[in-house]
Length: 226
Image 1 (cartoon, rainbow, N blue to C red):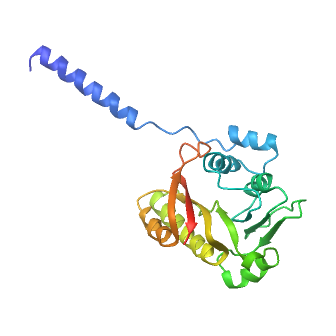
Image 2 (cartoon, rainbow, N blue to C red; image 1 turned 90 degrees about the vertical axis):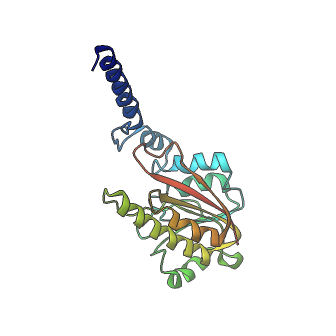
Image 3 (cartoon, one colour; image 1 turned 180 degrees about the horizontal axis):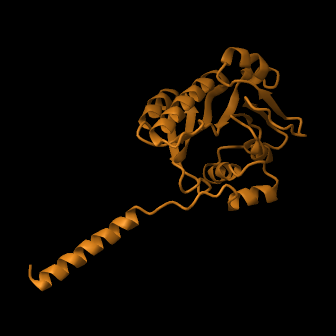
């Protein structure tokens, strides 16, 4: 090979490798106590996840005063804290989780320790706190499976859980109500789209900045239950 051709080939290869390295940018190292964690602690929220909901709210205005809202998979309860700031005293919030949620001082917030997928036994418990046909204007969910580190396995489990949340909305969400889901987005993501389209007029995908860089979670806002 001529020297000039060799130099040209080497430069081209180096450029290709450089461009490839940009595409494979590594995510930032995991920090449990990141800036959002410290901000949440400073502002009195129970978890950093509240800033995901806050960003969604600021962009889409999902929550409005007077709403009756159910937050499922609610522990430790930061979503409930933020929702309360918007609905104030004119709406009601019910939080449901298998884990106990520390009590709130406000009388329009109630929590239930229960399996959210056991609809038949959960319904009479919810009926103690909600009227209007015992259904909600909005359901929020920050549900996630116990992760294994395998994206395919974790995403499949996430889809399965969210399908159950959709079934929960069949029972507890009003007609034309909205639903917020959290999903791990990977190869099986399409499996959740059909069940959403069957139940809602439209949906919007959104990934808040508060999601960790290495996370493949995304939120889906399901608009107007059919």
